[in-house]
Length: 123
Image 1 (cartoon, rainbow, N blue to C red):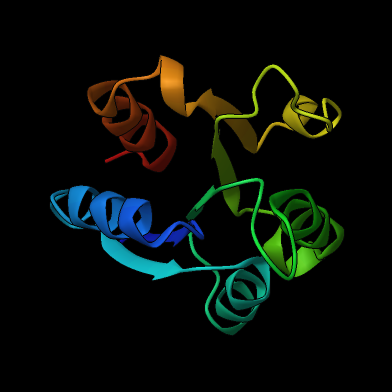
Image 2: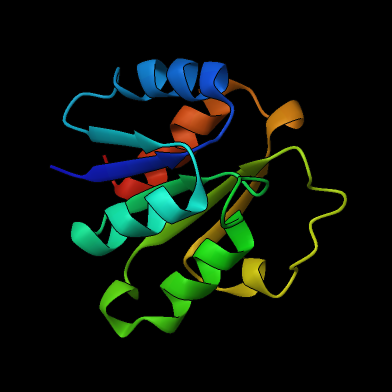
């Protein structure tokens, strides 16, 4: 069963996204609220995909992505940056990586996010 980790610090959005993601048949969903919790969960049991916000407390999404990319044991973890910072996405180098996708929250419907997650996880 594919595993998805949601890292979103805004609690109401985290809850709504988690409930939405749990509608995927055959997908295990875990959620965390900051970058430190994200890395702890990733290191404990690496997900197949992490849906990652950029602005989070304690460790931002860029730092989480850097740690994932620097760890050979996590090289297969896919990252979906789901953010409102697309126009000001400071780390263009990250989205050149084959396992990283950038999606703008305000410009993308949940139906499209669902299609993208299905594609990324082959489900």
